[in-house]
Image 1 (tube, rainbow, N blue to C red):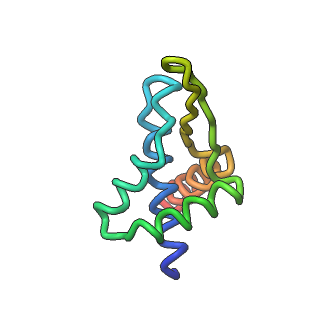
Image 2 (cartoon, rainbow, N blue to C red):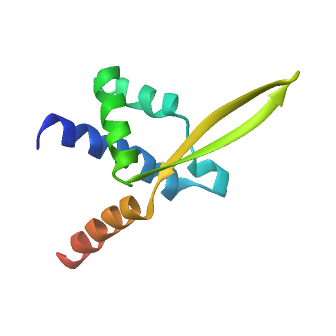
Length: 102
């Protein structure tokens, strides 16, 4: 597995874990900073993480949701991310294959 594929897999694993463990629909969504921190802790550098995170968004593996709000007349937007159905299916197919081997 090349380095980019490894990083993409780690990002998707992180998001799939959030999806699997969520007790509330809003808990599946994370900020880019949360993803970045999780992978930096695993030894990946920021540039690699951002480039691969962006690739996964563009390829449809990760969904991006924007939220706008106003504070004191200033409008601001922040983004949250979560694994798409493509990413979920990827992991669930792997799990089913593993179960069928036993």
